[in-house]
Image (cartoon, rainbow, N blue to C red; front, top):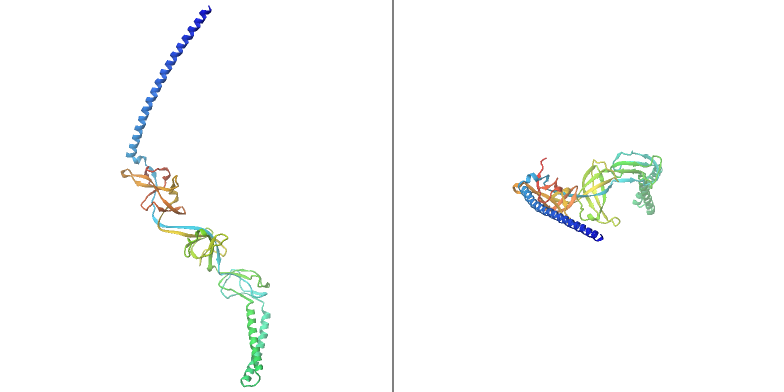
Amino acid sequence: MKHRIITFHSIMLLIAAIALNACKQEASSELETYRQRRDSLRLEMDKLQKNLIAVEKKISELDTIGEARLVTLFRPEHDTFRHFFEVYGNVESDRMATLYPESQGIIQAIQVREGEQVRRGQLIARLDDDLLRSNLAELETSLSLANTLYEKQERLWDQKIGSEVQYLEAKNRKESLEKSISTLKEQINKTSVRAPFDGVVDKIFPKEGEMASMQSPLARIVNRSALYVRADVTERYMGRVNQGDEVEVIVNRRDTLKAEIGRVGKFINPANRSFEVRVELGETDVPLMPNSLVVLKINDFTADSAIAIPSSLIMQDGRGEDYVFLAKANGANGHKAEKRNIRTGMRYLGQTLVLDGLDAEHAIIDKGSRSVRDGDPIKEATL
């Protein structure tokens, strides 16, 4: 009985192995079939891809207008290129004076008002000079007597009458009084404060009746016709800033004056490594006052008949070289983009000086330059 059971199990295992082997053979046959179909499709796809590329190339050659990118063009011209740099400057005047009295005394009268126009030599204020004038009157009386005595002694001496000592004493007395009177008159003149030049009375410091001294200011006078700007320029511009160079003076970031450099300093300040420039302003209707802060735009470079283009048109490649795209004729098929390397110089107010690589007959792609590549067909957009 036991032998029959073993034989039965063996038969079942054999049948299962035969069935499993049959399934494997069937699956392997189906997999091979799909692999063959895949390879066939790949061959067809490669063939179609090659045909598609060839067709697209032919279309690109024959129909450039339909695929051309719309762009705008910028046409450069030969013109003068100027570069400026900015520094701050301080408005000053050689005709601005704070007046001090030359003597001490009570202010007897102030002859002008603040804001009044005065002329050179005009009386500004007068100090009390009564004591000095009283002394002058006494000296003049003494001089009158001394002159009379001197004249009599001179006549006697001419007649060989009297002594020489008496004559010399009379002469010395007369001359001494004359010198004393002259000195006293100078002291009296110093009690009057006068305008040293034409100008406007900007400020009167004391009031009538107050004590004036030689250490206290009495008035300030300003002449706006003699204004100039003094500024410090960093030494990096040494040799590029010269007398006579064009300057724009910007007042309050609003008004602009045209001027030129009147003087360039010959000394480098070791404290801030700069040299001084002076710009003469002369007569101007722009409201300016001494100690005003202005901006100087100094022209440090000028190129005549140069080509300058908007800086936004210039791009850089991976090597850091500047380039633009030009619109070049493409035979009967319109135009195409052409990459052109250029050498650039200074930049100012959004314009870049082109030193090499461009000429006036070139048309540069403006709008649309960032989306084209070298050789792409292009078409100029009509506005």
